[in-house]
Image (cartoon, rainbow, N blue to C red; front, side, top):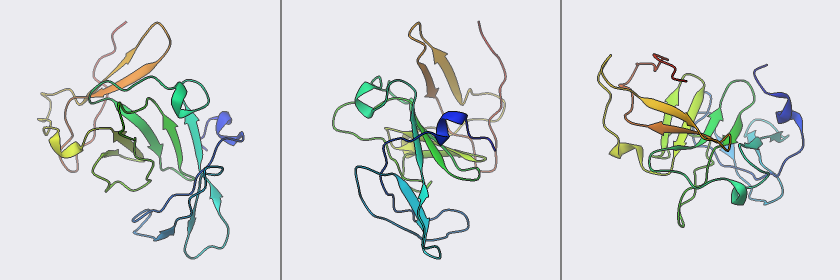
Length: 164
């Protein structure tokens, strides 16, 4: 399993409605501030959806997102889980949907990257010319992933350079 050990610890939860996940399988929604979970229509039991915070234990403790930074990473491999990176400025909320069709999501293999801004405003990357995103880390150990453009359909981003 690719889940970090912390994923198996108890966290705050909420139910989510999903429109299309794993071959357009419809999922059901219930809202509760106490529990995050998802379930398939075909199943009677809820599966826990883990939400991890890069900093602290809640949304309020996260740093405010810079423009075009990833606010959440959703890992769709096996059991989905969310890693919250930062909180959107003002009244904006970072999407918690597991769907990639919410207008704020970039998909890459088994991960969804959620942005505060609509992805339709991003330019399309040119093959082997543009940097898709950069990862920055500050003295407070907070990492931000800044998105510069989105990959063309069928293309995959890859690491080209690491700076110290």
